[in-house]
View 1 (cartoon, rainbow, N blue to C red):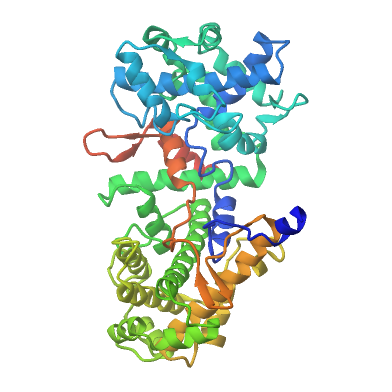
View 2 (view 1 turned 90 degrees about the vertical axis):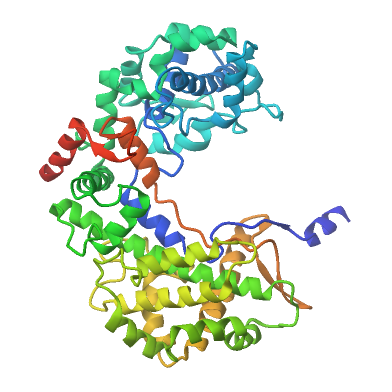
Length: 551
């Protein structure tokens, strides 16, 4: 009976990520454009400190087993963070240079504050794997296991070890580890983690481990710069892609400062790559190698805005459906949705009656692609849509969100060029897009085959019905097939369509660019003015940008 009861038991329901699968093409695109950096590899120095620790453990604990490795590693992970935070507090208090995004930082900040107040600090209290409030990280191998391992494997710095923990590679991992060893006091570091008790004096003496000290470790620094920019050409096409995307960020920093436009940041980057300009209506002047990369990021951004438009309409549908059980089918709800007050008022505000009419109007009135700072540009329409939704995620202004989502979808449609492949030269594995119905290829087909001839209210209903509820059921069912939990946010039941869980707002993807900006700061290619907050290139940054022309 127990097995039978388990079989018929309702699966655990979780909100899940990407309910429409619309983010998957975007994630694939930025993965191609910026390999070797992920949305959780926040600091450059972990790329060298983690291989160094494994290398140093082998030498200092030749008979050490997995349990010993885990114990000392977790203490070391905590110590890295404490060193960085202490160095920030005792120098310029600039967290971006020192402790920002260090592993377990939020849990360890109170520990350091207590230490400064004269209380005892034992690393084991935070490095423990026991489920206690002080535990810095649940993953057995902390930040290495959770965030950096896959990337370090891909870059050839580390590999799987025969004793079930990670090992450094002789060709690359050992080389960078030996470079770190020359710049730090490894004897004191290991003595500290073994003794377990921390003092402010020890943290001060170990300051060479702080991320800000990377520039003082010359060989380590050179190795990391060579790796991120693939200056020795050892990483093939992935190395070229990473170098060019980092180079595009350097170019943005340089041009943003020279032309007195908005500071170089993620939002500005999105606009610049999509519009092909700095927002001044003029073409962004780029070297050929960077121009191709900019076009790749432009495709990503176009797909991102399409995804956000679809997500917004889906969320509106869930808000209107939530708490009701009078709709037996998606088609029935779609028919009601097309006539509901929210859609009627939203369409009325657009002052067009059909999709074809809206498309012609957009082609005639949209600003140029380069004029992406214009409030009528699709880039700004997308920003407006998200800001309206996030005014109150529990009770968003649905009419305004629908109006903006429809305007965004129409604007993107008006820019579509049938003479150009939807994804340009960006490749996907065969069959990849079949699992993700919302993509730039299906978007092009929908413009001519599905949306032409529809009224705007029918168009809104199509988006909610086909790219909303039907696509969600397709994606959630596929996920359910491979997992023991359910990500359904709406389910057909005997009582009608039932919305489960809270309505999760439309979300951007994280294209690793914040991490890339931070890594450029960490390696000293850029610097931030503490008064204005603006970025500028250093001598190294200018040299790296100039060398883009050589590749």
